[in-house]
Length: 106
Image 1: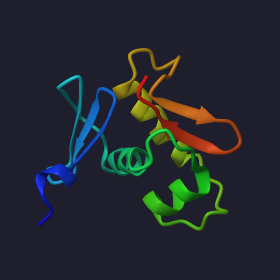
Image 2: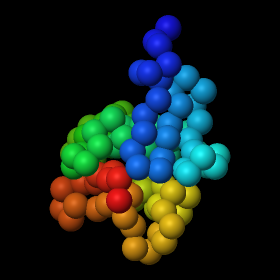
Image 3: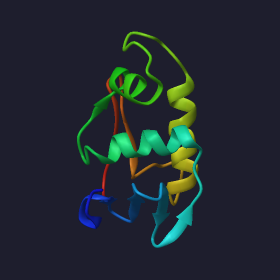
């Protein structure tokens, strides 16, 4: 079993406990669907870096990278609704047009 230090991911106000599969923002619990949780973990493993759409689709859903699916966009929307102070002006889950997404501390 991994030590406690490696069982937490933290970017800004968002923390993920990998052992208990829980998410909190500013210390408050956040409920996410299982796939939204997996998507968040994938993004938070690369804070500040752009993760390509194809990489996210492969990592979270197991699809080939060239598969076009709106499922990713739906789950990004869920993350924004649950984690952003203003989902229509996202600061944490950011879109990098025509490339992918990233999470940032601001």
